[in-house]
Length: 137
Image (cartoon, rainbow, N blue to C red; front, top):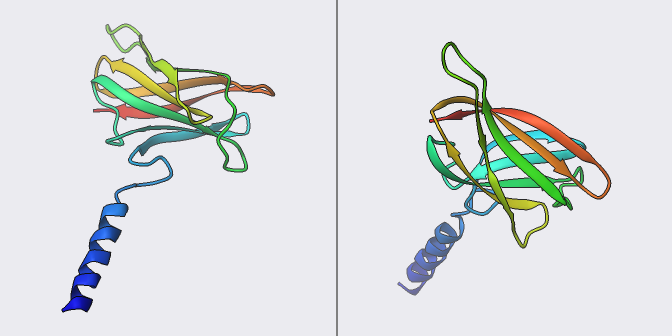
């Protein structure tokens, strides 16, 4: 009986600790891209971009897989004009975190559909930019 109790305790502990989905904790990657020797990841708790308010995380990692010293960053979601619909730009508001190379982002996506996530950044040594196609639900 004692061995069974220990087994179930160990199993419960393993299940409880396995809740993290990746190196971002509970964040799930929506899209990633590369620019200027960096990997840039946009993530959220759900792993999705949705119409309406979104709380995202943008993470910059160098070629060695280490958090990058990013001194400035921006994130904009662009949808080109289609038919009678005008071009849309939904700019994210970024705030720094205590983790180097990691920013919290808040953005209001106007409509579901295909958007271009446009990322620009600067480090003490370089700058870069990239675009990633993302689907908003």
